[in-house]
Image (cartoon, rainbow, N blue to C red; front, side, top):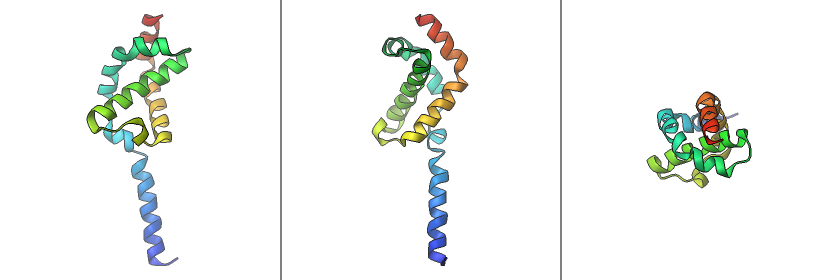
Length: 105
């Protein structure tokens, strides 16, 4: 492997590393938590299960933050990374989400 190939390989790895932190660098979790009760009623009526409610509620909050702070819509975001981030955050806020679910029921 020549030097140019090594540099390209390292740049590729760095891009992957940086990309994997895309949402962690941009999303303030306090902003997400603040948006949860605001969106809970509408998301509740649009979903059919608790798991769907949990995912969609966090997804809506994350996408709202990305749009309001950076002007990035869902089509501009790395899809799989967004799914992974939403699942991670929804687990972090499990208690809050369950409380919102109970209030809506």
